[in-house]
Image (cartoon, rainbow, N blue to C red):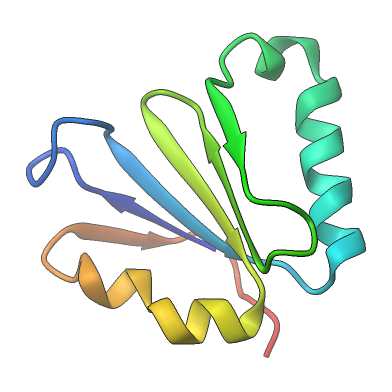
Length: 95
C-alpha cells in the first residue's frame, strides 16, 4: 500500500492511497470492516465499485482509498500518474 501526498497538485483531497486486494472476499471484508467501525463510518463520504469489480474507491473526504486487484492496479498504475507527488510506501503488496 502506498500513500501519495497530492496537496500541491489537486484541491479535491489531500492524499491518495492505493492498495492491492487479493480476492473479492478480501475486498468485501475490508469494506465491511470499515463500514462497521463507528468512528470511520462517520467520516466515509461514499463507496464506489464492488467487491467483484476489481476496484473499490472509498472517499474519506481528505483522502481517497483505492483498493484494486493486481490486474487493475497494473493496468491503471495510479502511482505512476502521481509520480511528481510525495509517495510513502506503507507496506509491501502481494505479488
